[in-house]
Length: 184
Length: 155
Image (cartoon, rainbow over all chains, first blue to last red; front, side, top):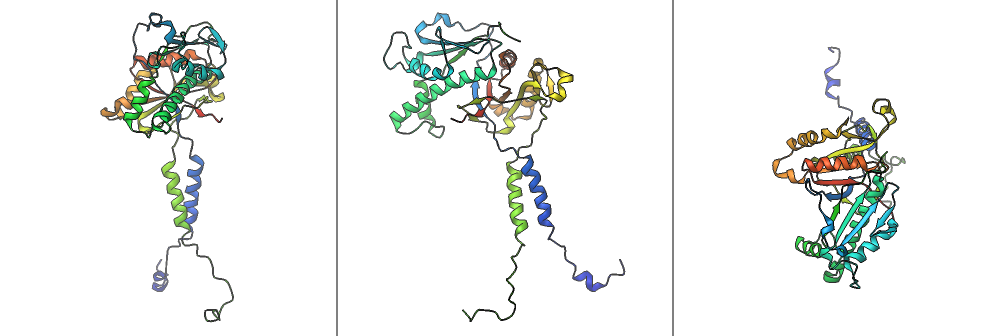
């Protein structure tokens, strides 16, 4: 220590050359640990718990769009086997009922989608069905918004407009207690 | 031109690397801010299903995660192979859900309790039985905002 001359101490500078290396090291650490994919999903509002099941049989039959899924992941829509790919179109037709058919919903705000599945149904299928129903509604909202305001329906629209459109086509999905035939 | 040519060295001037640390730091801060560190080690394998009607989960502090899937290879000796529920970083029972939710609620400001979301990260191949049990438990604990985690489906 004492050996060092005063002169050399004065000219001492901290070498900042390795700063970049340290920063790179940290950078690479964060690059590796980062998960860019943000959490996305289908947002659902569950009904509050009640001991009694909602009784959809009391409703007018033409207003109920029942979708049953069995343990083999097959769909039964209003009594006839259907593919998932056709579900959206059928749901849309049912809700809007453009031809005023007797067997489809009286009006969009009376339409109810009733889902029922089995405990053995694959979760992927269940979500697919749910997604199709939601997609049908969001397409209807979009069409309505295009017709009225000439712009696509999005969350950036004023709340009043969104509320108005949604109240015209209210999303009502009733989920019944699942059957238990095919659980592993 | 000849006015500015310097007569001395013929060597090209060196590129200054003095700003390199600044650039790297900038990148570093970007990644530090955007990074989401996994708070829990996954003990169950979750292969998310695909969907199109997706909502982004906004405030991370208002979200808690429930994982459902088959235990990974490492934990199969301990927990078996049938689908189970993972809360936080441990395999749990359905009956632990209310306590798990309460624990999360304590950390959140009371005015925002209504906006707490349960993110269900469920494997697409799991049967609905366990999912239904989880849903029923959530409904009974009055935790009604649920987000079924899914990946974007490419059309």
